[in-house]
Image (cartoon, rainbow, N blue to C red; front, side):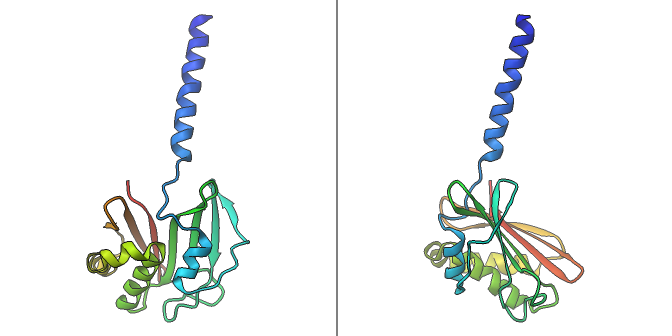
Length: 171
């Protein structure tokens, strides 16, 4: 009986440890969704969101011409940790046929919106990394160093003329 009880206790400890690790969301910056959109130059009502995978998800249609896929489909999706209210991931859906320079400029604008001061300090290196990232073949991921403590992982996919770029904290 003791062995069964000990095994159950060990399983519960392992389960609690795994759950705690999975629940830990690393923020991209100490900024909320509303502040992120404001820094991009948009006034977005952030009272409407979905709860997906323990995150608040904001789907928006930003009129970024010529990058927008359409006027009806969201092209920026912001994931927020509901406990800290900080942005933990940003997904971009852009027209894959748009000019590469426009794509790189928009990705740089998104990263700058997360933390303008850190972006300004490392702007040449960040823009160079983004340029190489956008010019790369269909599937690509890179890590961009924002400052001494933060690095972002950018991953892209191109499918059916949609350029999907995912920005999250690098390990």
